Picture 1 (spheres, one colour):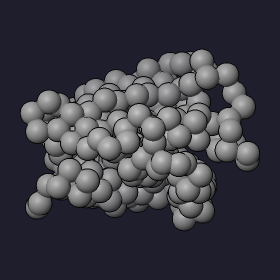
Picture 2 (cartoon, rainbow, N blue to C red):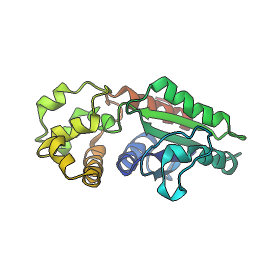
Picture 3 (cartoon, rainbow, N blue to C red):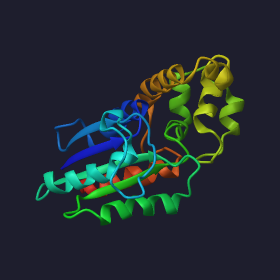
Picture 4 (cartoon, rainbow, N blue to C red):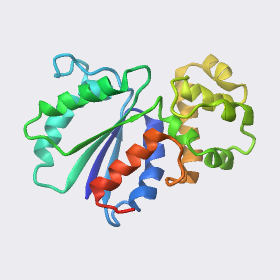
Length: 219
C-alpha cells in the first residue's frame, strides 16, 4: 500500500521517517510512503477553500484543496492519505470533526486517516523515556519525571527543559528559527531509538495502530 503523509513541520517529517520504517518496514519493501512537511498548521478555512498563498505551505489552510486533489489522483489505487497535526490548545473531538467535515466535502473521497499529536509532536518522543535517555544521557530526570504524558503543558518546552542547555527559556531567547532547528535535532537524535511497541503516548499508539490497520498488518 502507498501512503501520502502530511505533517505540519520539518521536525515531524524527520521523526516520521524513522517511525514509519519501524511500523511499516523500509519504504518500497512491502509498502511505500512519501512524507510532506509544511511550515505550520494554521487554521481550517471557514469556506473550506483556503485563502493563503500556496507557496506559504500552511497545512490546514491547504488541506481542503489537497484532499480534493488526492480524491481524484488516488482514485482506484491502493493508497491512503495520513494527516498528522498537533492538538495545541484545541478541543480534540471538535478539531477532528472539523477535519472530517473537509473530507465529507470531497467527491470522490480519498481514503484518509487523521491523527492528532497531543499536545504536540514532541509528546511522541517523550513517550519513550529510554529513547530520550539514549539520545541524551544527561537529560534531566526531574523534568522527565514531572511530565504527564499527552498533557496540555507546553510539550516542546518540557523536552527543551530536559535536554537543551539552559532549557526552553534560553532557547526562546534566540527566536523561533533556532527553536525549530533544535526541534529537528531532537527528532533526528531521539526517533531512531524509539520503540514503537513501548511508547507511552496514547496519541502515538492510536497513530501506530491506525497505520497498521490501513496496511493490513496484524499484531
